[in-house]
Image (cartoon, rainbow, N blue to C red):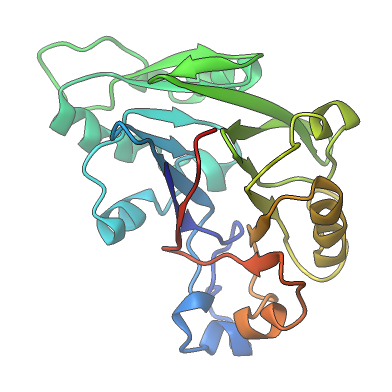
Length: 256
C-alpha cells in the first residue's frame, strides 16, 4: 500500500498568519505545512483518508485525489475534521455514501455538529452523504484490517491507527502500555512532534524521539509540527531511523 502525507502541520499550519520567523519565511517547500492528514491507498486502489482538516480541498487538488472510499477519524478537533464538507465533491463524483470510522464519542460528535451530512443517498448530492461507524476494536475495510490504537491527547482519549506495518499517531501526549503492545514490528511510524519544548497535549521533539526508540519502527516520520520546527535544522538533529515528514511525501509500505 502507499501512504501520502497530505499535511504534517499543526493547527495553525506553516507559514503562520502574519509570522515573520525564519521557518515561515523559508523558501524550502518542506517548510510549507498544511493541517495534519494522510491518505492510505491500498493495493486494490481503495483510498482511505485519515482525518478531514480544513486544508483537505487544497491537499486533494495538489495530490490529484479523485476518490475517497472511507475516512478514519483520530478525533474531532477542528484542525482534524472541519474540512468534512469537502467530502461532498467525492460523494458527487462517486455517487455513493462515504463511511466514517472512529471512536463512539467521535461519531456522536459528528452526528451532533454535522448531522446534515449523515444521510442516505438519494436524488440530490448538494451536501455530503456520509455514514457514521463507531469502532472499538479491529475491523476489516476493503479486505484490510484496521486496528484502532488508543492514545491520549492531554486528557482526551483518541485513536491512532495501525494498518499492516504502518502506524499513524498524531496529537499524542501519552501512549498507554496496552497500546504499545499494538505497535510491535512496524516498518513505518508517523508520530506526533509538536515543538521543541514540552506541551501538555503533544509530544515534544525529545519525547517523540524517546517514544520512537521504544516502539522501534524501522523508520519514523515526525508529523503535526509547528513553525518552530524548521525542516533542515530538525533533520540534522535526528538519528538515521527518524526523519522529518513533509507535505506530499509518499511512502510504499508492506501490507503485512
